[in-house]
Every structure is written in C-alpha cells, then in structure tokens.
Image 1 (tube, rainbow, N blue to C red):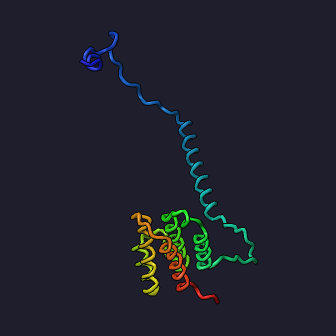
Image 2: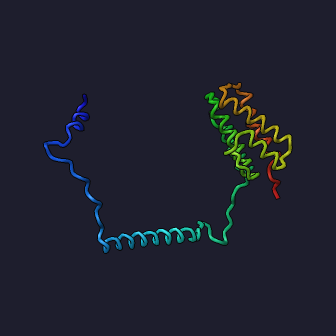
Length: 184
C-alpha cells in the first residue's frame, strides 16, 4: 500500500482529531470602502488617459506650409528594381532571394498604385483583386506569369538559368511601365 493510503486509513495524525477549516477572513467595513475607492479612482484614471491619448492631435514633423515630396509608386519600384539588378545575387547564384525581392517589389508597387493589399494576399487572391480593379488583362496575365515563376523558384526549388532570371526584372519593369500613373 502507498503511504498516502495508509495516512487516510489511520485517521488523525499523532492522536489528534481533525479540525475544521478556518472561516473566511472578514474585512472591516472601513477597509472595504478604501478598496472600492481605490478601484474607482484607478478606473477613472485609466479611462481619462485613454480619452486623452485618443484625442491628442498627431503632430507631424513637417510644418503646414511645407510640402512633402513623396515619390510615386513607380519611381520607388524603378529604384528597387535597379538595386536588385545591380546586386550580386545573380552572381552568387542566390536565386531564391533574387526572386523573392522581385516579387516583393512588384507587390509593393501594386499595393501603392492600386491600394490593393498585395503583400497580404496570395497570388490567386491578388490576381482576382487586380481584375476587380479594372487592370488590363494583359498586365494581369504578365503579373500572373511573373509571380508564378517567382513562386516556383521560392517554393518548388526551381533553379532558372541566369538569363531567364534576369528576364524577371525586365518583366517587372514592363508591368510598372504599362500601369504607372502618367506624369502630369
């Protein structure tokens, strides 16, 4: 038999009888009022701080008379594609990173140009959103082909030759050229 079973069978330890549990501790009424007051005060401070921070005007580092020169989405995409071309990813044979960067640049461009959350969507969902945004079928087909090729390299361990890989940047640049906002 186990030790625990023997203890229960013996009854009281050392000949003493078992005692009843202690009653709950009673809190004096005056102390209870302090606890309630502290809880109400803490709640009031929390709610006040929340309203203050929510209504606080957001200050921008730019003064009101000064214009912010934000680059257009196609300008950002061109710079990023140029950086990918000039990087040594192809020379090192790092095809996965190379294709991942191209796909991300294209998705960021589509997100900035058409306000589609392209980085958060799967390729299929992105293509459906692009069709819903009234983008030409030819551009959607090129995007589909480019992203499918990039996905093959990223997820299916397909290793394209360098000339085929360098064509991905040209395809991305063509998509940006065809869909960019006209300079007015």
